[in-house]
Image (tube, rainbow, N blue to C red; front, side, top):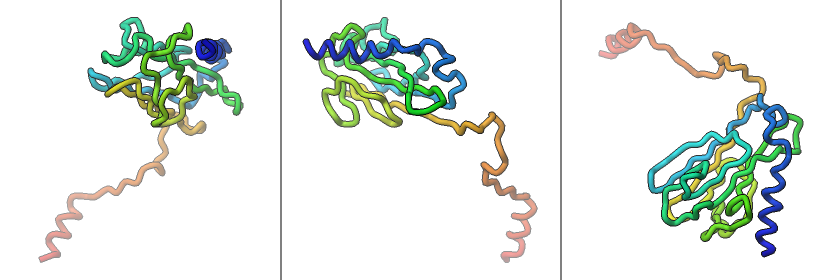
Length: 172
């Protein structure tokens, strides 16, 4: 029973003002992506909502197709990152549903089995069951980027077709 209380506390922490996009940095230079691989193949989810349910149940926000995962296998919770001034956020994955009921198989994160909760970091791997996994990506853009590209970003060498003809002619 103590474990269920722990789940409630972990999820209850999400009551911070994560629903307000202004407080979560709508102009954030971060993109959170979860790539799921299950019995139906590969699916990509861009994470923006304050909470996601993950599981076999069709009502889940992220539906997993496998008989080896629980109906409500895990919950993703969006939380503010307190260590900077940019009002960025991160996602915490919690085993089970938002009422504290744990999944049957638990979560394995980065090879560690039976993890009850984990603050996701770039390239974390979450295994829900046999052949069902997710990889989390946190993509960050430079805060100074404005959508325009600078020519110095590319290393391009242009070759005039006549230059290659000359090189072939002088080679004989």
